[in-house]
Length: 267
Image (cartoon, rainbow, N blue to C red; front, side):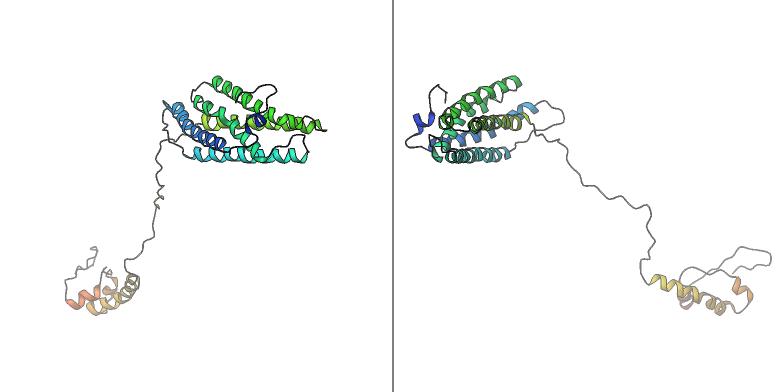
């Protein structure tokens, strides 16, 4: 689409029967070129970066399809309502405006391919050229319908809004799809292990051990008296650890020793 003075794309090429075949395939082609060459551009930018690995982002295609679909479907609908509400001298149908917007995206297909070249000045030059060519075609279509409007602010504001949205679309594609490098750090995340406790409370292996130990401690003085009599020396003997009662009943050898003192005994 090349703008020409005194040329109206809608009246010259779209009317009387607007086709949706061209706008549909132009939009689909732009979606795939933006997603594919956007990933290729990120690969070129990430090559040689230390500690970084490149990953294909197929979400770019989904995002591009959403943006382009909203732009081609919603903006012509808003423009159609503005022209109808202002009772413009030239009335366009919604399909005619949609067709014009679909064909206006043609210039962005080769531009999305050339954006792979990683030179900032070159990319901005492509934006300026593409926005000027396609935006001028749209302005030449809409201006004849609004130039006789009594409120010139609305007429000029509508043309300014058309050019602004067209420029915003081009800059958004460049900044997000071709300049923003989404890289992975290449680090493998590991689960964080909980810190080991410094001390644990001592628990008996068997819950009944504590009860049995207490009962044995109570029985020990009685067993000493049964074994050694009621002498005072029996009370001075140490309590033997272990199951004293079972050893006494089974006849197992039991040795109780105390440090030798003056007058002490050794058993």
